[in-house]
Length: 170
Image (tube, rainbow, N blue to C red; front, top):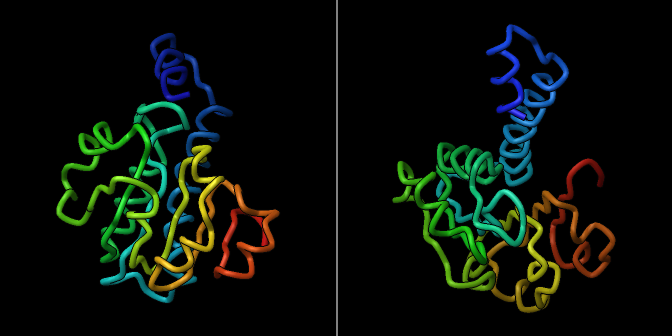
């Protein structure tokens, strides 16, 4: 979408609707950081397990990935990050290099959630849908689960085991 806007500008055209969509997407990422802080009271000195770094599943593409802004926002508020992505870690390191001291990259989803105060699912990788939820519950320090892709929204077990926060619904 940004490329379309830039191309249009080269031809003296404005793409107001597309610009509005870009602005809304940027606002939504900031909103997710604020939601996490609000629900956890504070994230200062807390560990957040982040699942999914790439823009979309089955790729390592980090261009415009929401994880960049969300992780940066969480770190700015004092959180430590444990992150896992099946394919995006190498690329993520390039985009998050300026805050690398606050990020531990993990070998799998279970390592990323171990001793975490909260979990944030950013990209809907298939393997995150199939996680052993009981195992996850036993690994975490606190049980906040922010499901930014609503992959567990219909799972009552998840709702019972975690302080579950989907996007756009309760």
